[in-house]
Length: 332
Ligand code: UT7
Image 1 (tube, protein in one colour):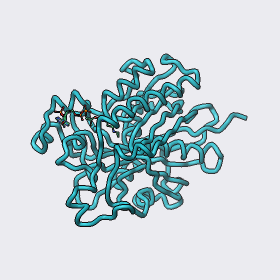
Image 2 (tube, protein in one colour):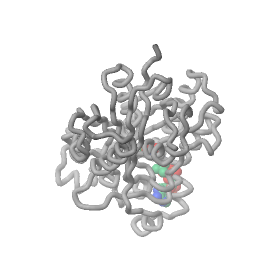
Image 3 (cartoon, protein in one colour):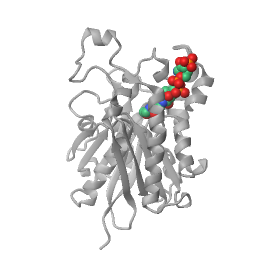
Image 4 (tube, helix red, strand yellow):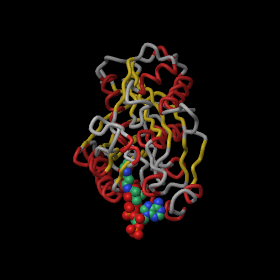
């Protein structure tokens, strides 16, 4: 009997309307379009505006699109995992709120926190539920409203991040398509280089933490950059090696969109030409857990059944990883 794999059978995505361009950022902090483009590749990012809106609202939109595309009723979904570091609230889980907003009344749901690698870690987790035979319809969401935790007076971070996310549906496949292999890594010693200081159990919110701007992302850019270049490239290369995949075998690299220079380094290490690399950092910036599903969403129509796709990420934690999937459907 053919092994059961977890195939992605539908993709949904959502980005907010408002475009925060480099030109607008020039009026907010001491920066310029040329610096941002050449150092990061970002030209604009989307920002979720509006009172009372959070990550769950974007996640719910992505899920609604996905269900409509697949022609599936929300009540059929059995499990929802939402990767996010910007939950609507510390609890309940954003995944629960997404279920409530979309009518996924029969699903159990929870959040997974692994920063920029959140979507990959959640995809692996969701795939394991399918491979075990325990569930047949699992949704994995990757979404972040980074504008909620970015300091728009800090030019080193506010130029990179944006809001948005996407969702994929996982279903069992017996034709050898789907999630085929993953390498996932974490290293908590990297926390000192990238974290959010206050609002957790160690340093609950006080007037002092707010005044000290400790509820915003703290990032030592250069240190993170060095680890990211090595981490993402190494793990992607290792995944290729252990599965005897050459650059010719790979149709697409789907890299986390943190910095164009990190993406280029990973593609070079894998010997992949730029035409095989999904890049939309110029439009959306770094949406943390949202980058990978947003790429799949944008490129969905170009993907063909049987395409070998490598997804790769690096982010806060540190967390990093790479996943090999064989695409399971043709869109047209
Ligand atoms: O997704 C989560 C994981 N995160 C990442 O992967 C991010 C990794 N890091 C990066 O992408 C880059 O380190 C940054 C984009 C954050 C910064 O780029 P960089 O090339 O590493 O710049 P830098 O921090 O080394 O700063 C170089 C110079 C400094 O000036 P001096 O000291 O050389 O005079 C900065 O003050 O650029 C200055 N600078 C800026 N100038 C104009 C820093 N930010 C800006 C800015 N505009 N926005």
